[in-house]
Image 1 (cartoon, rainbow, N blue to C red):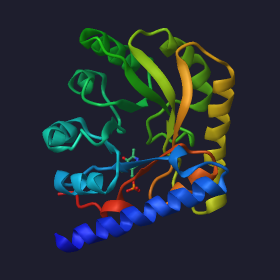
Image 2: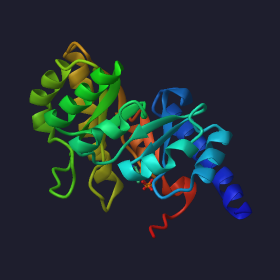
Image 3: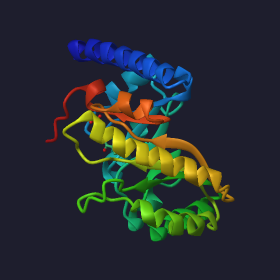
Length: 236
Ligand SMILES: *Cc1c(COP(=O)(O)O)cnc(C)c1O
């Protein structure tokens, strides 16, 4: 455990430095980029240790796991996001517990988030997930479908669209992955220029352990980092 804590501290500081450098290299300030830790499979003791170092955004991608860890997170000092595939019938279990749902990929899901948020008298922030590589294995809406979906979501009560999220295909080279990030940035900018009521383009969530520097250079405002912070995941 002691070794793990010192590893996490070293990793945390390294990532914060890398983020700051990429921010400056892309003409922004370090504080313009949000560092979210993807905490699937990670023990809340380790998550809270990272929060004690200054980490202030965490994200889970399974409802069951989020609920089982929920009472253990230090949420006085961090915001909890949902970043995984979400089924409509599980929305009720997380609305009110998370500050943002990053992975909205259908009108049906948005409608259910709206309905559950109304019941609780709150507004839930969401990102729309884009399947930027058009991969059959991944969730998210195709870039072409965004134009139709966004105005429909915009009409729903108690939901506010804060931006876009993407998990691009695994690429063999840096140029290729940067190409996907560029497509996302263009969508993000084009949509923000449309000035749709109730749709803000504040958050562009893209970049993980292997490619967060490139993502920031291409315009990401939020990166989701797991294994570079906590080490390789142990699923058992
Ligand atoms: C696990 C996960 C990440 C982080 O992946 P790493 O490669 O470990 O940094 C980012 N985004 C989502 C949606 C994830 O599920």
